[in-house]
Image 1 (cartoon, rainbow, N blue to C red):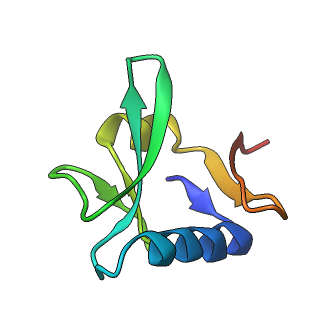
Image 2: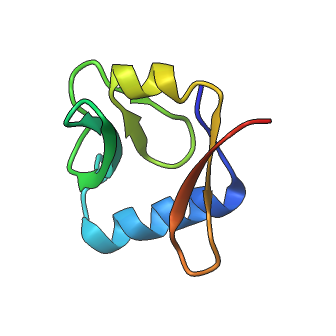
Length: 86
């Protein structure tokens, strides 16, 4: 399962809260065009999404499987970065 660092948790929370007042809003990562990931703030998870514990992050099932050994982190300037675990 995709793991979030503490920094990523904080960054995701900040991004979601700035974009929506909804308690179900979250950051959704999904496959886009069959070759890349799309990241967006959504009002709620899609049916079938994997909902991560902690920060409100929703993964479409394909992304959840392909990022099962990855870590979501954030840089000091607030950019989210996905890296494979060593």
